[in-house]
Image (cartoon, rainbow, N blue to C red; front, side, top):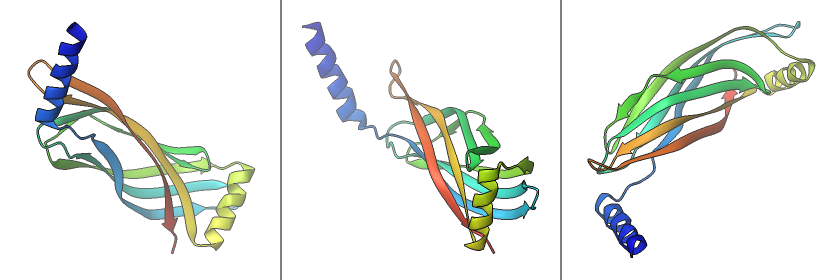
Length: 158
């Protein structure tokens, strides 16, 4: 009997609030500087905007423990973090970053990939990370979950 009441209560709360999952996405990426020399040292400056979206019509979302890592061929270029922030219902919040990586040494494989990608005028980066998200659904009910981001950024060079 307790199980049935619990299920009915969860269903009613779901129907009233009709929650949708929050998500994060890359809204903008611009490679401002790319210095690469024959010794395998890479120096980049990139502008990134990561958008935290809350499509939920009835609850604000709080994002916290946000951490993203920018890679080139598995080599970490930068780690991006954000303080906790609130995203109002049916809204989004931009996280703007200027990413500076100062003289990152590339291994042999990454040097070969960099040489080939520069000839094609396209440089692939990978941005991956996560954030914790919490909704305050009711006075007594809070829902927590992870949001993940994993995307390949192919920047046209020139």
